[in-house]
Image (cartoon, rainbow, N blue to C red; front, top):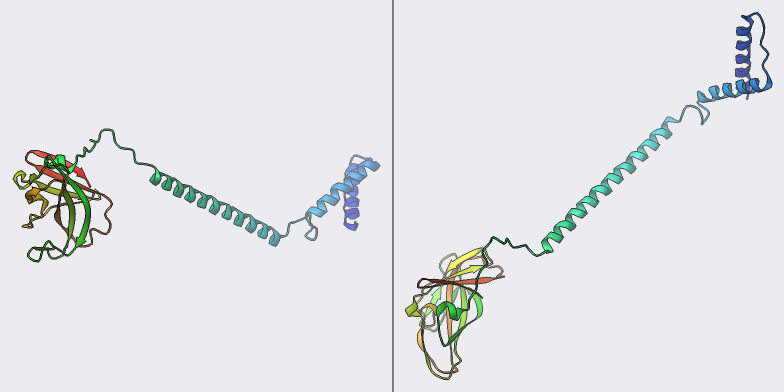
Length: 245
């Protein structure tokens, strides 16, 4: 308050002196005097370090700026995490959506093993597969895997569902077999001397009877951790057929 009065007096004195230059002192009205006092008090307070309205506390200002900077950093980090989450969700959705087939890509045409081998009255049915180091038909016939390989053995049933004995001669057709596994691995069947080799089978099957047959493939060790799909490509003469197992 003391500083305000001093400032007001100083300003009034300055006005009086300047007015004296014109030859006549200027008398302030009460309202003018109040305005001068208010302005002087504001001017003094503005540059008073001890007043909160004056020069701001630098430490408080730096603290406030640091807080705002930290909030902005957290906001940017949240936005970044949100974008990454959205990208991950979009990727998962794309993986879960069924793949759109290219209309220009030729569609695979599958046939039965009977049709591929032209077996007539014999019904050939795929049963299962087995992975091993060797396959034994009898004590006299055994097939072992080559070094670094393992055997993939496919088992089939040749069934005569008719009421008459049927002669089954696959050897005369001289078929070749190639197996496509998981749309990645492709291997050809071994030619063996096994009596039940599907590619060289010859024999008669009684009415209502069955004969077991196999196809054997050599596969590099470690390649068959999981079998998801298999397609058997059968070549008989000039005909090439695809059988889904």
